[in-house]
Image 1: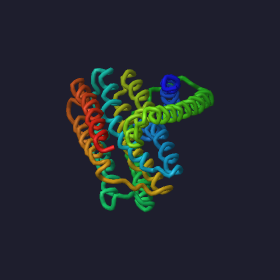
Image 2: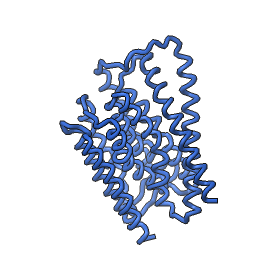
Image 3: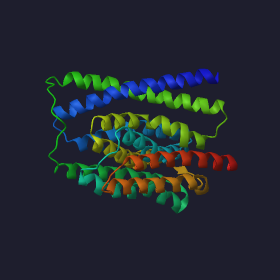
Length: 316
């Protein structure tokens, strides 16, 4: 039974990878036709779309009366995004040189926003519906800020000769549907696999579900780096962190308040703060995400997995 579930999980991952690859090509073509800037594509469009699996998990977990799973998923996804995902993408591209000053400036804002839900949780160990409204409001304000700032950018996505926008939009909708359907199957089979392996929900959210819902980011960022568009990859990573920390947790808390023991999430929350801070410092550095920096991020994720596995096994 475990082998069948594992096979279905891997098949779902494969479908997600293929559909994600086509999705990236289509969004670039559509952005070119609409004369959108590359950074609008990365920060607003793709960052939101690649965070929808986390949003679905949050809403689903809230409706099932287990919203803490969403918190674990967001913490795990944020850690995966700024270590393993961006680390692999930068390593394949032999480093990412950050050229745009907006990204360097916004990295600090990203870091501060990622701390907001943790601060709200520390206050009373609950993300209430009011906290949820605050988080969603922060997301809306951040999107407004990005739109305002990106109007100053003059660099659109490379021009495309595509004249009929209906075709790429239709294909985009199809690929997007397949992407999210396959992402849902990834999560479903990961949950089923974890139950068969007798793993607790917290570990499911931090590891299996977090990796499953972060696969769209891996596809987009890797494709972007290989296409020599490293800024797009970094923009997507930063946008995903913001979306996860505000919109995803905010919507989940509005549906069902998230109550969780700070001690249970303490080590993973501290890990998220550390790796997000390190990611911000690498983005703001002159070298950007170098090969050595990429290796360091990947090693930090491996260390996080080993430490959390040991720590959680001691308290579960």
